[in-house]
Length: 445
Image (cartoon, rainbow, N blue to C red; front, side):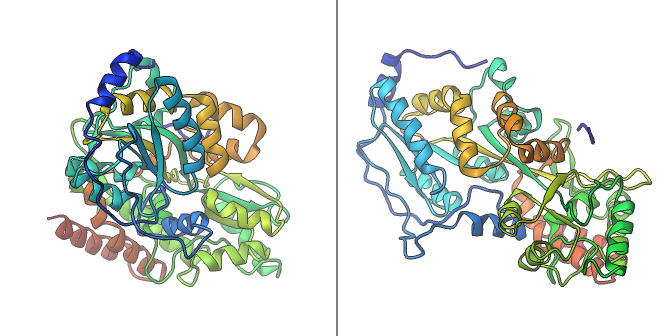
């Protein structure tokens, strides 16, 4: 290991149907907007990667928002990738309780859900990323999920933690994702024991003419805070401190702290050694690794299809730590089911997320669509037994830090990303991170 960081009582069908009949299903729907991946919207390369992966096949498809079916007692919104699977399970739920269900595709789930819910035309359930949570709670558009202790115990600890805001659970998780080290095993047969060993091996390969780059990961001219975070957090630093309840504190920005600056100095060192480069963006990274021109790539599961398509023999490892004790900690992203605060049928919505989303078969079906480690422990164990990649990604994400789910995070991505790019380009880590801290604090205020 690299690091460590009961179902609700089932109400009767009759009671559920009474709740369904009491919903305001006759109100006409209002158009909203559309296009979405349900992955974390960080404004960085990670989000762009997933959008490319999950973009609708029909580029001419309508981007109009879904319109709620007034005849459906339970309505779920998701992206186009998960919708077919959810439709099967929603129909099964409808048959069990004698109701009409509908799964609708939204192409911008986050914004369309906000727009539609604000005019009482949104779905009962929406599928999306955990880092939307703070914004949704602030806007008053999602409700806590009433999850028993027994049900909570079914999920990995980190995935469940990501569903919480101010100590309350607001969703049922179904998948996780984080960064790891993807290694070309022909160039680097053994996993590096440290970042120093990784750099040494990469430089040897470059010097011998067997590789062009020591390592690749997205930086770009504007930086990428998501991919830089494992280094920034390595010495106890990061973005926000925590409050008394253990939640993220927007009034305690730690980007300019000594600990974060120490991580920034490691970014500078990696750049000096040729392991980080502002000329490497996501497409360039993918091309270099697929062409066998670098032994290492720090990326997420979304990069694997391109590696497989290039027929590169690879392995997935945790991002190595530093020899002086710095422990690289990537962000953890979690996908989950939210219940709308304005659900037409809140009892039905709570029942679906607590009894169906917690079902191993449903979690396995969702895994087949997204190829992300399941959040349900039993489902994770099942897929890990048959899929070495999933077992490896799970290990790579062990102890990962759930991406802050507070609205203040929107003020972070641009300033912090640019600061890391400037550090890679040669600027002083302490000066740039101190300046980024000031800009972030100013944006929050």
